[in-house]
Length: 444
Image (cartoon, rainbow, N blue to C red; front, side, top):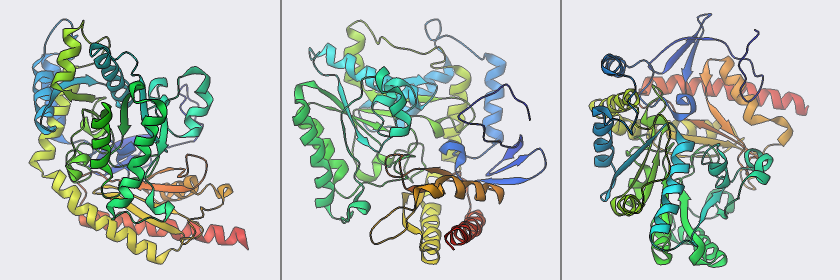
């Protein structure tokens, strides 16, 4: 079909006709299970009538009110709701339209706060590799994923990186706090190497997203990095763009470790796929200091859009009304059990990980050595295509910095039932069977 649109590639896809709950249909009538919630966005499922009604109600009042001209009831209410859900002391909310805007905004807020504190030398935002924090140049500067960053290296100021705590690849025990401290020490070492006086912030996903495939930090890691940041006056930014909104079994993934950051980035499931929406939630004193010193020199046209905020409010209402955070925890345990069952059946599954309904499995040639599958198999694409043909949508990335390895995110909407998890598992099973048969034939 001829098209004027272009995206990442020429990969053909059918036309979407409708979507409801965890299911989607193309215009030929074929049904798909949204096993990745799009890009981990449609947390409460598709076409929720209560969200649509809230959007219609707001549309009848007004669809746009520029933030410099008007306050709006929807944006004020959503800001209050977000602050109430955030850790104590984080009461200031800045709305954006997506995850890249959220991480950029957080970094710029941190920088302006340093300036108000007379610490103009602080500008370095340390992050991890692999990592992914967005597609804009500022967000790419803190992203550790070579295929996405390398083409643009001359156009940006790349920030310092430390290794992500992938204990399973390094042969370390993720349940031992010594392992967490081992990886956290890399942050302190990097701060000292760069010069503490130049280090502004550390940005981290509490549970990994696309680049690390639902990586759960080892015991002791999250609390120790908080201590290190405090010791050197470095702000701690939690990128909860993917993990926030209840998907891990807590509204914010960092709650699993009882750690409070200085700034939180939130998007994706915050708007639930109904509207582009994200937020930065920050400590009161950070924001007040910036506002007292000339204001926040930053903004986006649709920040605080009342229609988006009305949808966001309705999404939170549904999460709470249907106890979806709790369901994510329960169904996440069942999903992990199902994935481990598949791991017993298929020797190429080398690892299963995640929290709640932010889960992933990784393919390997050898579990003992952690050797990835041959790069030429393009498993991260091929298994996705096979599953898609069978009516299951999953999400994949290269595991080893984008250059090798194959992991697959299985992140269905938070409304998913145990029976629907069975459907997903059956389709995964059939897809893995077809894929392993393919690679066996090619090896023969």
